[in-house]
Each structure stands twice: as structure tokens, then as C-alpha cells.
Image (cartoon, rainbow, N blue to C red):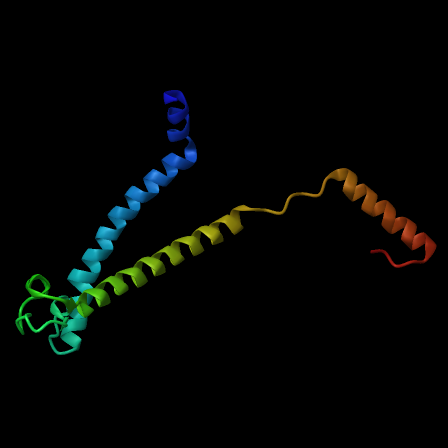
Length: 141
């Protein structure tokens, strides 16, 4: 059973998937930083200083008005609208970057793939067909 697990765990697809998950987690942290440290402050400045990280809607009367989002969550039920906007923006950025990467890979793949050369016997058969068609008066295909 140990050999079977070792064979499974060291297959190329499993190792590739593990590497993809690790790189994806690191990429997610970069995107979180870009959104939280660069984009959201700019959006906050454009909207008049609105801090999206602390933008929430209290659903409970026990939530103190003006409290930070983290503290408000401890006090009662709140809708974290600012947190949702941040996560949604993260998703859009990640999806767009992945779109660009896949698009670039597809273009690279198209440029590296060349049409396979027609084998010599197929070329010869095509020429024979065209000669016979010309001799019989039928247009070649």
C-alpha cells in the first residue's frame, strides 16, 4: 500500500497540482497586498476618504456605531460590505491576470505549432489525381 501511495503521490499531475496550489497561494497574497495597500486607498481617496475595510452595516443594536469592523464583528451581527468589495476586487484582478496568462500561453502555443508537412506519398497521389482529372476533362479537386 505504501508503494502504491508513493507511485500516486509522485505522478507528474499530482506534483504539478501541488506546485500550482503553492504558487497560487503566494500569488493570492500579492493580490491581497495590491488591493489592500494600493487600489483600495486610491478608491477611498476618490470617494472622499471612505475606508472600505471598516465599511459595514450593523444588523444588531448591540453594535456600537463608529467601531472598527473587527470590533463590530465581536459585538454582534454585521454585514461586511467593505470586506466584500475588497474580496470581489481581488477576484477580478486574479481572474484578469489568469486570463492574460492563458491568452499569452495560447498565442505562444499557436506560434510554436506548425502545420504538419504533407507526406510525400499523399502529395504524389494528389498530383496523380490532378493529372487524371485534367486528362478526363474534369476540374481537379
